[in-house]
Amino acid sequence: MSSSVPVAVALGSNLGQPLRQLRWASQQLALLAEPGSYRCSPWFRSAPVGGPPGQDDYINGVALLRAHGDAGLFLQRLQRLEHLAGRRPGPRWGPRPLDLDLLWWGEQQATGPHLRLPHPRWRERSFVLAPLAALEPGLRAPGETRTMGQLLRDCPMARPTRLA
Image 1 (cartoon, rainbow, N blue to C red):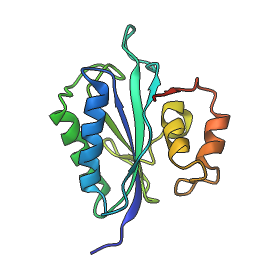
Image 2 (spheres, helix red, strand yellow):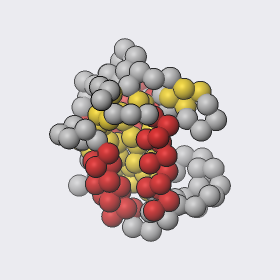
Image 3 (spheres, rainbow, N blue to C red):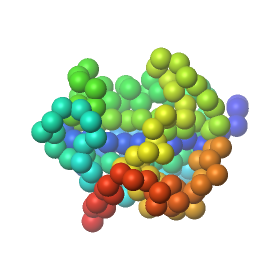
Image 4 (cartoon, rainbow, N blue to C red):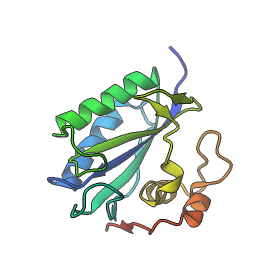
């Protein structure tokens, strides 16, 4: 079996019962992880970025894990979880019951139409950086020189609110 790689997945929801859906998704992601490697951040509330006006705030978090196999197959599993949670095609950055973004898969780089690694905008999004920094402020993503705490400090986007 191939060696595992560090993986980060962003979780978000602003339709239905966001916390319930995110907790379910977190449990499902833990099943995809190498045993003992799964960690999920606290949850944060943030305003929607882009998309149609009038959306509810998002609840966001990030999962860190180690996984084996193929990033493309893992992405398909994430999309299946989104579908099971009720996500259907809609407007870009529109409201959704579950949004799972593969942030990185080890040091793999990909620029295809369906898989882009690392995620092209993760360093610019406080709703991704705040959960990462809460989980492990000293963490450096593969190929990144700055820590999550440093990236969050330098991020110009408004900070999300940590939920109790």
